Image 1: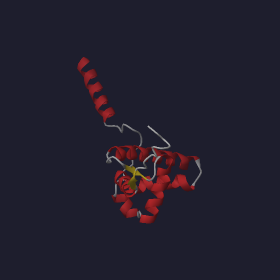
Image 2: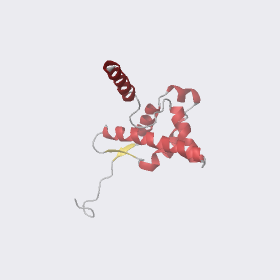
Image 3: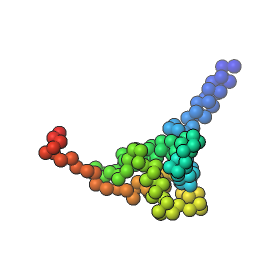
Image 4: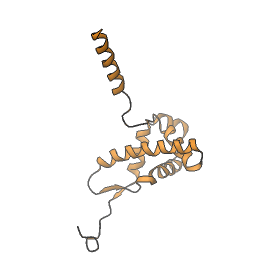
Length: 130
């Protein structure tokens, strides 16, 4: 009985460890784009929930991307601007159904962020001393 309980605990722990640690995970760029676009064009509760899921996912990727940048490199967009800017970027670039299906959501966000790199603004030390 003790062995069976230990085995059940081990299986449950393994299954729990394989679950996504930080919320919803998108597989394709098309799915992420669809949720982001729904929230920018519709105002229903379901669209807003999809938009929030999209925004949370993009923020997680953004935080990781930001940590991997050299000093002095920033993104043109951040915070609440990210989902709308992501949709605008892929509308212009053209994320078709087939290409959106074969590109991962993470790759599509990283491509978007890489396209928005810019030098970080430097504070004016005369008006804002350290």
